[in-house]
Amino acid sequence: MHKLTIHKMGPVEQCELECVPFLTLTGFQASGKSTIAKAIYFFRTIKEDFIELAQRQAFHLIPIGGLDDDYDLGYGLSLEKGLQRFLREKFFRVFGPMYGVSSEMRMQYYFTKACSVAVSCTQDYEQANCRAEKIKVTFSDALKRFLREKNQSFSATPAGIPDQEKKLLESELQQMFDDRCGVVYIPAGRSMLTLLSQQFSYIYATMHDAQKESLDLCTRDYLERILRLRPEFQEGLLGLQQYTVRGERLAADITQQALDLISLILRGTYQYKSGEEQIRLKSGNYVKINFSSSGQQECVWILNLLFYYLLQKKPMLFIIEEPESHLFPESQKLITELIALVNHCGNEILLTTHSPYVLGTLNNLLYAHTLKPCFCKKAAGVIPESFWLDDAKFDAWFVQEGAIENCMDEEIQMIQNERIDEISKVINNDFDRLLELQNAGVEGGGKECR
Image 1 (cartoon, rainbow, N blue to C red):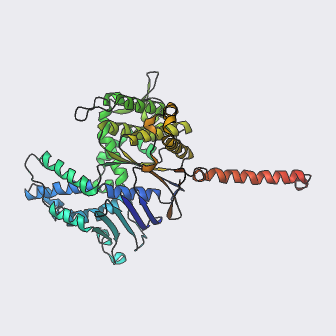
Image 2: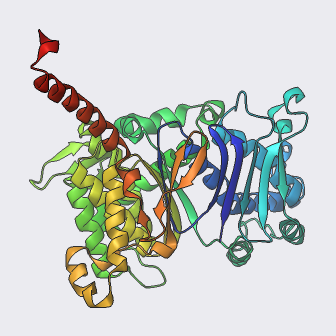
Image 3: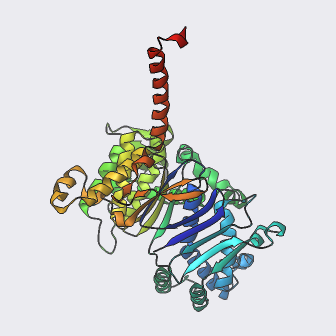
């Protein structure tokens, strides 16, 4: 099982957790949830970095005008040295300049016992002349051997890299990293990006590379994914149903459950038509996405991406920050059930949330799975079985003051109620104190008010 460790990285002082198929992070803002999520993104996308570098390396064997300029980025080096250089640069693209970062910073991700990648500060971090010299990337011995074996593994032709070679290397990478999943990062603060939807294609196209680099890599990945996929939605979600994988389609009942949930959450259906994003209403009218509600703007591309990749039937890790943003409590429940449905279909989830409604819904889905077989049919009438969560593949952590604390109740294998009700306890405590003041005044004859 995958494991992540973090030491003195941003707000996170110490963190060690196993990356189960459904991982939930909750806790106060600025406590480190996003740092942990970005760290997992950084490591889990190394497979894609490997493929990219291998292709670049292959094309250097056949000189093609312009590609030699990439030599400085490490594409002309061995895969091992090139990947180290690439990951050092990627670190700053994901986490930013890291002003004031501790010289003791260290992150390590264990894909298997033998395969791991570590990132740490160099000994001369403070005196380093360029940012690439501030960071050290270390591969485990098994991964080093693999990188050396696969050095110059692609044969480049004028038509590109043969598909058979790509598929073989992808398969070997999945085995080496014990990871079949692609990665989709859905950041917080989505409504502003959606609000600028009509103008964003132009804005992004006219940005210089340096300006694009100023966006953190997770946000940039999200934006480029949307721009790339929008044309696929010309016929809306129903049009996407024509997708098949090896001649197979997603089960009709699962597709319908997903569509029903999306319709209830969005209060309409999404469509990209005539170069603009629209929410089609039941009445047949539509509203442009930049004039829709903030809740619709926040959730629309969570829904679109989940449904799109669900139909693709390719395992994905969805890293979703605050899916509850700007949504009514009932819609928070529904979007959590949709995420659980996607997990049920073989995808992995990393969820950050502040919402007691999201956590409460997760508990219901966990509880439904624990019921005795004789109650299962009746339970499925309350919550469809395709939404249920297996506690053996689920974990939840509370992040605060630079550390993480597991918040699963060991006895019942559900999220601890006190964590869900953390803020409610504070509010209720204030009310109880005010009530005590009033009762004391009544008992004292109201002397304090005279």
